[in-house]
Image (cartoon, rainbow, N blue to C red):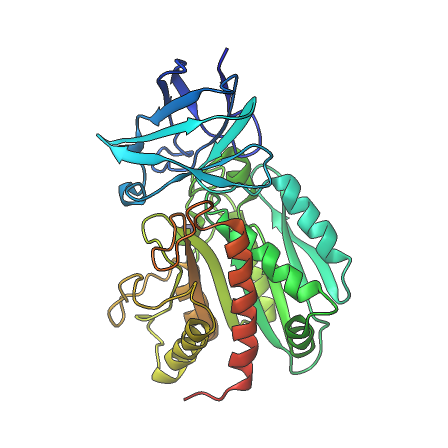
Length: 376
Ligand code: ZN
């Protein structure tokens, strides 16, 4: 028999009709019911079959623009994730896949489990100059882990890197894995130099509760953490409260908040145009970093992205704007795609964990170059 389950870490699917010729599914909304788009489930009993499944509530998802041109992710071993033929039609996401194993997993993007997060923490803390600190507890009682890289010393610049405020944007923690490989490898010259010159505060997963629950965008209380930075509370957004309080202690010179974007098929940065304290000097530091990254890798570009906020119109409840305004920092939001990059397609895997990790390497190399070049 064909069997479908989502009863595991970050699982999300509801079975409406368990017919192997026409498996009808729906995505379960996040807490608060405002958002959904992340899916992750296992199908067994379809080996040798041309399995057809469809998500019947795709049209009502948080970002309908995420579906056209999107190919679903699949894996037989949960290590290698490949794309399967996917269409968006009649408001449904429809997949047909010739299955060649007893079990196959499908997901919106390659999942990043809490178990893998524990291993990332365990591996990273063994490196020289790395410390682990629990900033606080989530509403479900999970620790909010922060790794600090680089010993404290006079004159070291405090840098902060955050990921997965939005838990369904697993690209962000794959990116973190790549970044931590650079920063903890004794043989990596970029990592060595950054450790010597900066103190990096790294939160690889800002929303472990939402990650575990299989949410796209919110925590256990149904809160979108990246709309809480102006006035975080212990009741709704303890994750942001803990991070922001710690930032108040360290100060912030440079900050990157790592995300995934459902609709835009390429990587891009968003800055802090429109903050009340905006100056050309502060803004140009961000544009300088963006130009360095653009030059370093074809997997980053500046043509597509978000519309810049008008003067004074920045949303200070978002991390990047709040951190830029509050600390005068060079701050940015990095967005990576779910879809494949049309300028440099990779039909087998599309945008993949591997590419997230490689982009992290380029982002850190760009950071080192940014430190070495003067403001324009
Ligand atoms: Zn996001």
